[in-house]
Length: 416
Ligand code: AMP
Image (cartoon, rainbow, N blue to C red; front, top):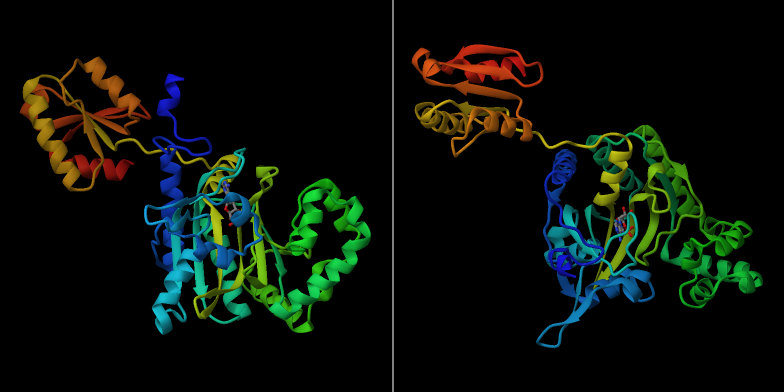
């Protein structure tokens, strides 16, 4: 089909005017909050060696097994488009050596997963994420959760829900696996094939299964925290206590596991009721990731920008792009010339100004001002030029007054 030539690939979108205004709003709200929390931006490449992801996310995870866009370059190197942000950032931090010991980094940008596209699930999607490097410390975990909630609040979202759980330590995870195996074995026949395969591959992933049959089985077995040490449960308690101090509401969800292998201790998800099946806006957790001969520990999150924008729209918080502060309309050549100069002077002072560059009749100019959603129109003809004024029309109220040219900025500011 001819029109397909102009469409991006399935599951990917061009983001353009007017919806790009909502993206810019979310990006700037995020940056403001990240700055307040003392995080610095890092921009890692979109393309990495495959092993950067395989080693950190885990060989048996869905992302690695089914969802990575992989390719071989001309030198036969096996590369992948990043399916998430943490692995690349940790590769970067590992390269910093001791300087990276307490890095507080954030990223913002596209991720790629070859998933079946549906509402809230794309093949190119965007995340804002952070990584706070450092050894396990419940206070740091709570700070990062608070930061994530604050980003969503700053963007304008009201009804977010934080679900919290723990993955325990590496040792706990061995106990969890054997406990789970014993508990699930009697139900093997009731589980769908995918969950049965997970039982043999990565049993924790059964707990992550979303299908009804697996869910019904999961209802009948103890939560994974049953097999964890008191030390890990106390750690989780401590995170919860700090969140209470910071007045961040949360619920403990003993069945929450999250899909990647690198987690230890705290894990969480933030959801929004409006999103239906794909209700997770954001996820995060504490991790230990091996890179070369080093193990990097830290805590981080990734927030899905598409889903956050969907949730904002559902709450009626859709951001509208703002039109020009002023549209200059001209009656005649002389006024048109003056208006061009005036436009440049006003722009130099930070005002968003537009005009009709090819002098058309007044009706067309006013139509253009309306189309652009200008707040004010400044009209000038020969008479106004002579008097040194502009007829300033408020496009909301329709009121019009003659204002001396030198007072225009003051007038826009004082009445806007
Ligand atoms: P994850 O890294 O899978 O925990 O994802 C973190 C967040 O990114 C999710 O909560 C979603 O908001 C978002 N996300 C993940 N995968 C997709 C996708 N395929 N399309 C859109 N958003 C996604």
